[in-house]
Length: 299
Image 1 (tube, rainbow, N blue to C red):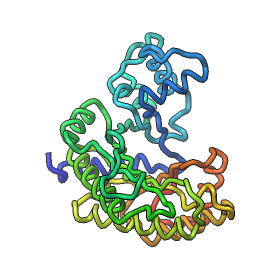
Image 2 (image 1 turned 120 degrees about the vertical axis):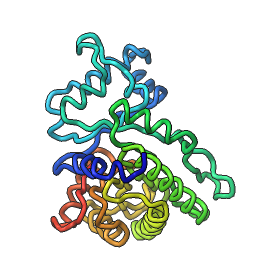
Image 3 (image 1 turned 30 degrees about the horizontal axis):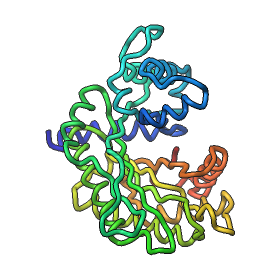
């Protein structure tokens, strides 16, 4: 179906995800990643235990008071709940709470040929349309695709990496919109490095400008999309770390210069910050915006 057939639904989904005071729950751990978490508590990484864990998330009382959408791994989207929850599809349990289900659709990163050492590009465009249609039929209404960029003294990010990842995000966003899914555009800039906050801000502006240029060329419907950026922080090894207020001011300045007002919400990733520090910075971002930002600023 063409994108025009989904415009109103995409707007409604994006608005639901941008509900004030809420954010997204990332529950899209791969089988390997969730295995590491289970190892920490001595639990076998079996399908039965993954089902029980994800059922517990989906039935947590009051979850929808703070969570507007949940990003799921493909296994979870098609998984039924444990017997104690009646064996209903897990996706239905989230929907019953008023939480919008989403799905991780990228297939991971690979080394970028021609780029600076360590740079990557995100895979998963092949067959994406068919997968998106299947996910929509199962109940997913938004999608996630994570591009990864880095700042270092060896020339990263390169022009090639910025353009390649921007174009991949744009192709993904247009493709899933044509199948009814709101795309989360996620150009993550890693915190690794000793660069200062002004360097981060400069690179972020470049990355976001390039990304939204690519989105425009591909005809992405901005009102039916979301942005998931890193906060504007100095590198983790920078000797002069910024406080939450500085992060808030730099982040709002960066976004104001680059993100169109048509985008309904900007939902931040913690990007290496602790939960407490990320919460303090998000609070400072909203204070710096002063209630006048054109987008919902959430987590």
